[in-house]
Length: 199
Length: 199
Image 1 (cartoon, each protein chain N blue to C red):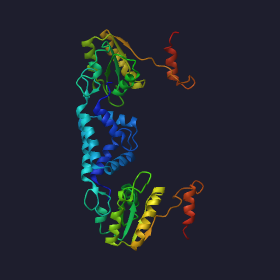
Image 2 (cartoon, helix red, strand yellow; image 1 turned 45 degrees about the vertical axis):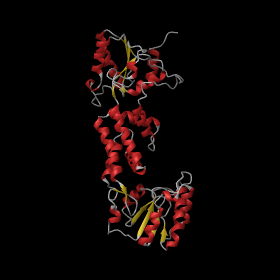
Image 3 (cartoon, one colour; image 1 turned 90 degrees about the vertical axis):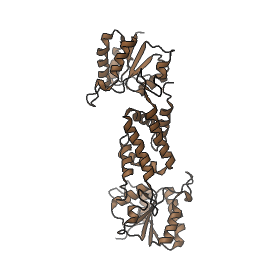
Image 4 (cartoon, rainbow over the protein chains, first blue to last red; image 1 turned 90 degrees about the horizontal axis):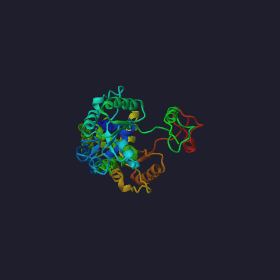
C-alpha cells in the first residue's frame, strides 16, 4: 500500500512511544514533521540532541543541569544544611516557584515501585546516603508525592536515614487553599484533621 | 533560577510548536527526553532526520513518497484516467483504506484559506493543471473536505479546471452509514435530501 513508507512508519512509532501521545496523534505529528520546511524539522532534531548532550545530572543534588554542579548547589546564599528530597526535577521546579524554600534539593528521579519494577538502586538513593554521610545536614524534608508508591518510598527513606542522626520531616498535607471541606476527599480530610495546627 | 537551562527551554519551545501540544505537555515531553537513555533520545532525533531526508513529494501526484514516483502512480494496474484530488496525504490514506478506489490521486497539501494566508500558489494546484494538460484524464474527483475552506477550494478548482474539458465530480455527501436522521446535522441532512438517490 502506498502509505507504507518505512521512514514514516518508524517516525510514527517513535512519536507513539512518547508519554501521552496516542497512535493517532503520533501519525499527525509525523505528517506534521514532513509538512514543515526540512530545516525546521532538522532544527527540532538538533534541539533534542543538544539537550541530551548538554544536560546531565548535578553531581550533588542529581537534578538536571548544564553544569557539573547546578546553580542551586553552587549558591552560597542558600542553606546547605537542609535537603528537600523530591521525586522529579518538575517537583523541584514547583517548590522553587514558591520562592519560600532556601535549602538544597535531592532529586530521586522516580519512586520505588514494585509494580513498575523500579528498585531502590534505580534511584539516586545511594547518592543521598553518601551525601548525608559527607555533609551532615541538619534536616531532610521527604517531599515525595502522596501516592502509594510515593508514601512507600518516603517510608523506605525514613528507615534508611533514621540511623544517620538527621532530623527528618515532610511537608504538611491538608485541605488545599481555596477549596471546601465538603469537596475535599476523605483521605486528605482525615490527614488534615490528624495533623491539625494549634491556633 | 535553577531551571533556566537554555537547552531545556529550547527543547520545550520546540515541542510546544508541534500541533496539539500545549506548554505543559511540551515541558513533560522535554523532561521525558532527558529521562530516557541518551541513545534512545538520539535515535528519536535520527528518525526525524531520516524521515525528512528520505521522504519527498511524488513528482506526479505530490503525495509523500520515499521514491521519485510513488507506488500508486507507478502502478499500471490502476486507472490512470481518474484523478482524485485531496487536501492531505492522510485523506488519501483514508480513501486507500476503503480499497474501493482504483484511480490516482493529487495531493494539494492544504486548502486555500484567506484567514490562514494560504493562497492557490502555496498549494500544488499548478502541478494539477499541468498534469491535466499533459495526461488528459477523463475524470477528476474533487474530494476536499466539507469545511468552508474546503468548499471554497473545490469551487476554485472547479472554475479553473472547467475549461480543460475534463469531467468533474465530487464524493456524495449525506447521512453517514449507521446514524439516525434524527441526529444528523441540518446541513448534512439538507445536502442528503438535495442529492437524493433514485431507487
